[in-house]
Amino acid sequence: MSNDPLLKYREQHQHRLNYMPWLYWTLKPKHRAWAEAWQAEYQAYLMDMETVEIGKNCFISPLAHIFAEPGRHIRIGDNSFIAADCTLHGPLEIGNEVAINHHCILDGGKAGIKLHNQVRIAAYSHLYAFDHGMDIQRPIYQQAVTSKGIEIGQDVWLGAHVGIKDGIKIGAHAVVGMHSMVTKNVEDCAVVAGNPARLIRYRNK
Image 1 (tube, rainbow, N blue to C red):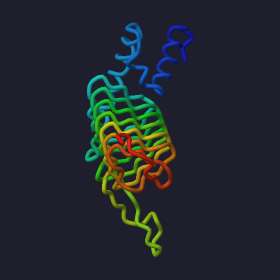
Image 2 (image 1 turned 135 degrees about the vertical axis):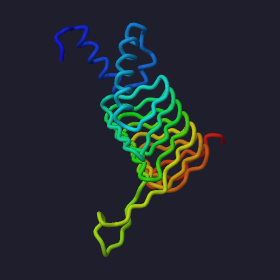
Image 3 (image 1 turned 30 degrees about the vertical axis):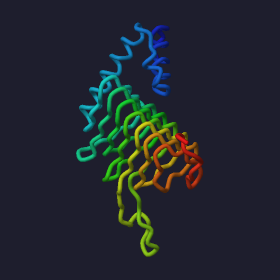
Image 4 (image 1 turned 90 degrees about the horizontal axis):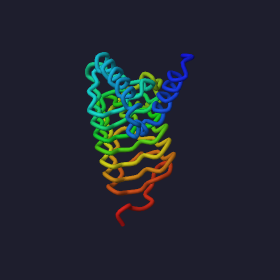
């Protein structure tokens, strides 16, 4: 770390943005200049190293782990952010104005994960678009792996520590409560919570 007070302040400011990326869009012009240059350099590196497509005005933390080898493309829409310590493995289709907060895991398996516009995913949520068989005659690691995919509708909010299993579709405007495990499809505008997640009410009724 530098001994220059201004550089030390910038390093701490970058660290804050890594974990609270929504602050990126509220930066004053003097900070926005270096932050945009920092992001442009990192996003160019990421797109060069992985099969990643990044939209306009995004924030991608350099402390996130993003893997998109050929055949596992990741697309990130405009005005979206990915915070520190997330692990993303394609195929993933991430819409516009999507927020993926710190320590989330999204693994697209073979079928992929699709996040529609304005999805908000709170910290420590896990989405796995694959599953193992459980035949007792064979060890788990030798079981066939299946993948059906996961789809999260527009304006969905997943609370902290939510788990989504393979094959699930969550309808638009739904909310999933903190620490819930979603094992069945969720209707539009539904509020669900629990393990397994159950209907609490509807936002529009």
